[in-house]
Structure formats: C-alpha cells, structure tokens
Length: 131
Image (tube, rainbow, N blue to C red; front, side, top):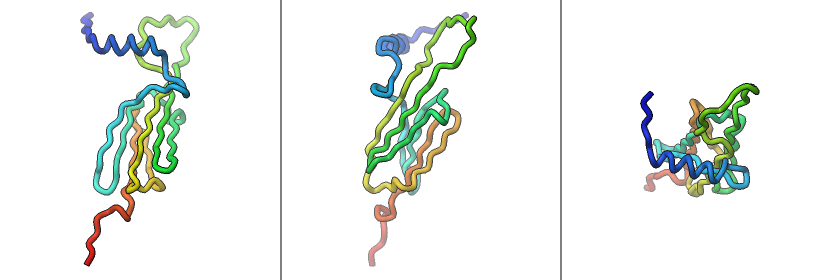
C-alpha cells in the first residue's frame, strides 16, 4: 500500500486533536465560497457528512449565522477504530450582510454536503435609470 505524507495535513490533524471537537460555545470554522451571480449573492458552505436536520440558519438584522453539527456514526460494540481523521462536533460561520441585500427572501438548498444560500439584492440597491 502506498502512503503519501502531507506535513500540513498532519499538523491540522494534530491541532484538531489538541483543540478537540467544536462545541456550541466554541465551534470550529467551516469553509465557504461567496460570489455574486446576477441579481443575487450566493454563499456555499462545505458540510460533508452533516444531515440536513443538524443545520441551523439564522438571520438577525444583517448578521447571518450558520451552525451545523457532525455527529459520530453509531457503531456496533465489536468495532475497533483504526483511524479517525474526519472532524466531529459543531461548525459555525457568521457573515455580516450588506444593507443592500434582501434578507427576507433568502433561499437555502442542501445537496451532496454543500449548503447553498441565495440572497437576492434588494430592489432599492439595483441600478436604475433616472430621466
């Protein structure tokens, strides 16, 4: 069997082991992408292995908060873990949204471990012609 060593991955794994899993009071960060697509902003979060019912999305004023929890998979009593690198615990991300976004009409979609939020641009912020 060929094994490839990545010193940075090992450092990340060691840091995660020392810090422990994320908790609701001290969650771990989750990776995300944010971009504009036409008349809406799109924010995509990587949440592999998280069930849809373990995701919590809140908006208060212009603060968007996404929290998710990856729970351990239930194993039989006779299972002996040989390697465990997939992080468990709570993951969270907060984003300050511009006043030009319409937080009343955010759409969420969760597919293949990716949570995608689509936030429309408010009508008052769209460019318009004044005659």
